[in-house]
Image (cartoon, rainbow, N blue to C red; front, side):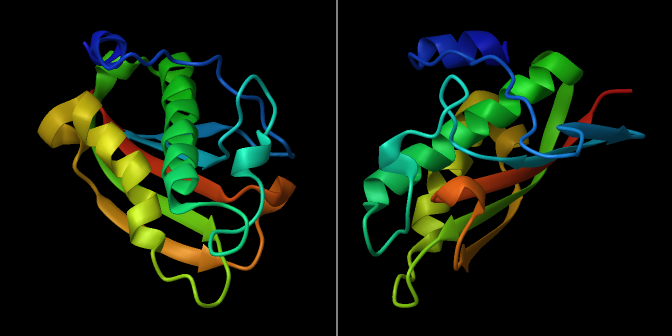
Length: 153
């Protein structure tokens, strides 16, 4: 059903991205799956419009789109790891936003990911969240997200 919901929104799941470092993209313990930090990569590359800082060279709209793309990448990892149909709840979303000191709309940027998760999973997609500013993120990405999800046994 989550894949059908994505399709109805005009979205497709990308191929699961490969890690950019020495870590596992997902780790399951019991009924929880932890998704490592995901960037808004498209076909393995960071688009120019998702590079830099909010409040400087990245618009809030592109920040939201970047957060949505990073969430799609996290969902692709979940699909490859456990299958989206096994997700019973999105527990927590962390969103890191590369931003200037005077940019304070990190929560609005994070909504790009939050709204996607709620649209795909309904009430089970509504989650606890943190949205914080960062001086810089790896690859000069404007957004990085991580997820904790609960899956069926």
